[in-house]
Amino acid sequence: MHHLNLQPLTQSLLELNVRSCLIIHKGNILFEHYRKPQLAHQLFKINSCTKSMLSALVSIAMDQQIVPPPNTPIIEFFPQLSEDNDIRKRDITLAHLLTLSAGFHWSEFGGLNSFPTMTKSADWVQFVLSQPLADPPGTKMVYNSGCSQLLAAILVQASGQSVVKFAEQQLFEYLGITAYRWEMDPQGIHTGGFGLHLKPNDMAKLGLLYLQQGNWEGSQLILPATVQHSTTPQLEAVKPYKGFYGWHWWVSSFSNEADPSVEVPFHMALGFGGQYIVVVPSYELVVVITSDNKKRNTSVDVFRKYIVPLLLNSATA
Image (cartoon, rainbow, N blue to C red; front, side, top):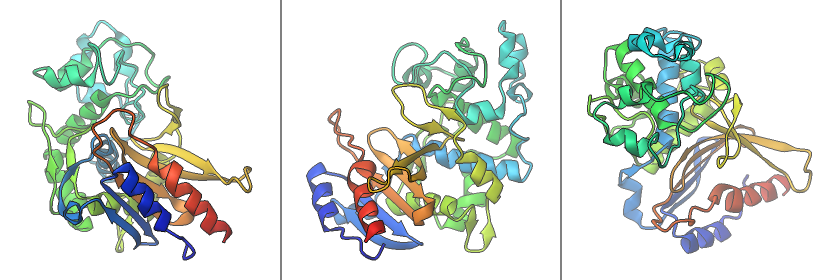
């Protein structure tokens, strides 16, 4: 890693107008780029990277037996499902929500069964629960921020605290995250699938926690087995998404061009518009990228296109 020449990366990031980029190796900042210095201290909406933060909170709650095990049917929390005409909804479990495989008919970014429609509804949780099923629960991963909202609602019910209060006590306090903003639904439940605003450096802390198998400065905040399980590929994503999905974490790999038989696994939190928290365990590396390009199609995969080649060069150096 010490052979990493990052000069070309700075140039690429400037050309791409990337808002921020951090590369952290073994807990030390190897590279830091901000379009303007003050962006280091500004809160920024991390979009669906929020899902991975929620995954961490639900994992903590499961480890502490505040939330029941993953195979628990969610009807325990939403008894109204017993009145639904589709009895298959009674089979939806916490694990199905975490892997976005609850089976709801849903098209994330548009149409009637979508997250924009959900956000215009008076009761988001009820909106999600009432959606028809397109697939039997557990069979197909379909990207759905509604599932995340159900998880947030379950965390509130099980812990008797708001998502933010739980996050502060169980996670933020340890990680030293003091500045953040987290949006809420009309019922006052914090948004599970999006809506958390953080500084880039605090995004990196979530990545580091997972790199360190749930350990933070000697405190085991999430059990290593839970971290392992949540970042293991459970289901292949349905198009247009590429890769595999764990518990609200994307799981993927890149191959070494010099030796294509070697696949380097990584997992990441991914947010709309080019927000990334990437964890590469074998390199002991965390990469954070934030972008705010409003133009469509400007969301280049900065990690794969610009950072991975540098990593591969350094590995052979």
